Length: 194
Image 1 (cartoon, rainbow, N blue to C red):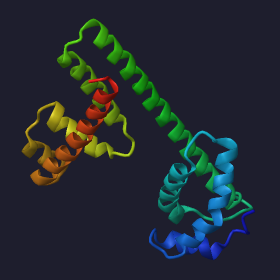
Image 2: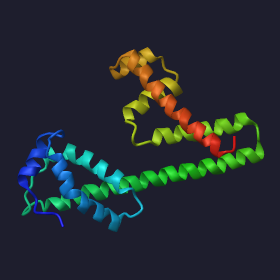
Image 3: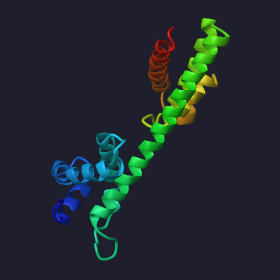
């Protein structure tokens, strides 16, 4: 059972995402969050949900006003964020599972109907690109910059100006995304028996 909410603890963590009392907060509320997730969302990784919840809380807590009489208890506020993040992860996992199923199906079809290696690679690349662009761990801005340069073929200098970053930053984004995409393609090719 979680102890009574400490207004000074909430005030301290609201003052900075780097405040030393965050570890106290986590020690106090983690068991309650784990129990909540085990009961309501047993199929998701509690660690992932808790991490995403803490990131969201760090952003929201400076605007949170603790007043149990009018806004309810802090535990309700926290479990609301926790449930929202768990649902997000469930949706994300479903999207990725659907993409993997589509990849397996298309891979099998491609191998059966057109065993040419190039056809298989094209199919895998297309699905890997879709999966990469759905990856919620990658910032939307990064995806847009990568798409402009790598897919649309826009000159890196123009993209740099459009997004207010250096040409070098554009090149770094492209290199990182290509590396992720290549790793995904390699993994899928291994799964296709290539």
